[in-house]
Length: 361
Picture 1: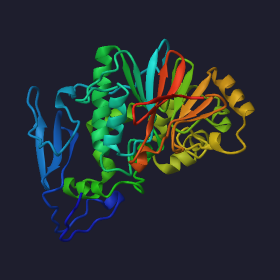
Picture 2: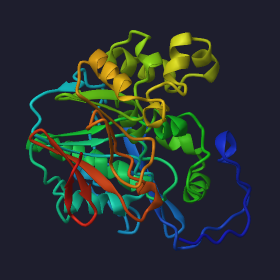
Picture 3: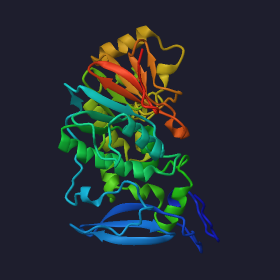
Picture 4: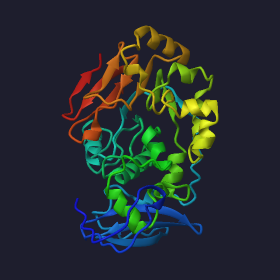
């Protein structure tokens, strides 16, 4: 994607909206971003280098060019949605699931993996019946199709419910970075979008936006059968806080997201949760000093048999200590290859881009 800029002033962060004279050529498309405004939903998007806006009305479709979005479906929007966090974060009796992690804007690679392993059909609709799809964080950053992935996961969440299945979107560190104005890894495409919409990038997912409210309702940790899912991991330091999973999720939702850094760092509990030993940043499972004994002790404390994490990239789905720890960040962010974790009737498999399933040892 090319952007021809005549002249503009651009700074990441709070001043991203600052602009003088600029022109973005007709090859640029992005959106739609949906905002709450005067008790209505208003969509804004960039089409052929021009800003468009329309109020979303029941039964009416937006006149979006196909190039704007590969996955936005206005029929799934609910103007009355409250996005209250689910009180249930533990699920039993799940016979099949697929987990994918650290997609980082690589929309087509995600779609290819989900299609070939039967999660979605060729039109990107839910095809997994009563199965569960777990997105283990980090949709944001690096790639240039973040918004398409967010809308796709949102759509699949609605379709899965209708089929008796579920989609779980677990927050990763890059979700919190973007909500909190840490924009080090944002794709340059979105710099132009922020200029067009005259909003800093975090405000495109702020509390007054549809996707922003949806993202803020998501958990940090859930359990399915005898598995724990968390983006980076649960360290001994984190577990020593004595918090339940419900309390961890609530702390992120109400005391970390959208809160000033000073208040987080001044609280010893929040400082651990939001730090390198916290569930969004921990990498200790994959260090040389993490042993089978430590893994067994950790899972004993959790009352589970497996902990499934992303965050730490590998060339393929990685198993430690006979599947006690499973790393599902398969370097999708590189955009050339990737895998999904497949669980069927108590057995784990690596789901390859070729469609092959390889039993996880």
